[in-house]
Amino acid sequence: MNVEAQAPLAVAPEPTGVSRRWVLRAAWGSLGATGLLGLYATGRFMLPTVLYEPPTRFVLGRPEDFRPDEVDARFQRAYNVFVVRSGSGLYVLSGQCTHLGCTINWFGAQQRFKCPCHGSNFDHEGHVVGGPAPASLMRVAIEVGPEGRLVADTAQRSNGAESGRPGLYLVEAGALR
Ligand code: FES
Image (cartoon, rainbow, N blue to C red; front, side, top):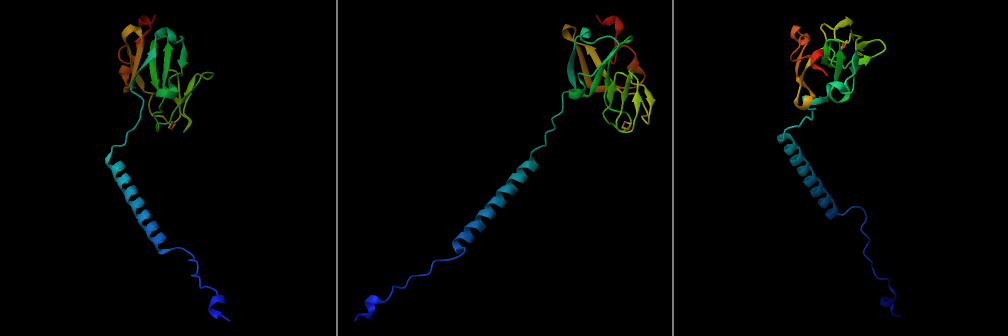
């Protein structure tokens, strides 16, 4: 009897677990990824961060777009201003509270601007009528631009004596059609 012919062939055992090649590839891969991340972070650091803010000058519309004796809040969301047309003329009030800068809201039924933060109240001309606010609301510069359209500029603001006089911060009632 031929013993050699019947003996089973020796088979190499299947490799189990993680191979050395796989570990090396993973190590190089993670090293490369870390390097790329570092490059990206450096690039971001070198580039200026752009702040997207609304333009300071913008067109409000024609005087007749604003109803007499009304506070118009159409521009509050985009520019944080209120357009007021009263007996004295047309002016634009900043929506920023003069206490700590919170955003005020107009309550037509009470004819008051109110600040949600600490309760300051302002009348339709922006004067303080209650709360801790130390000064009137700022008026924003306004002019009658080309084609009779009103243009506001939030870069120029005042709550000083000049803000109530016709000129930069008030379009007189007589100049409105
Ligand atoms: S921020 Fe408006 S009352 Fe304080």
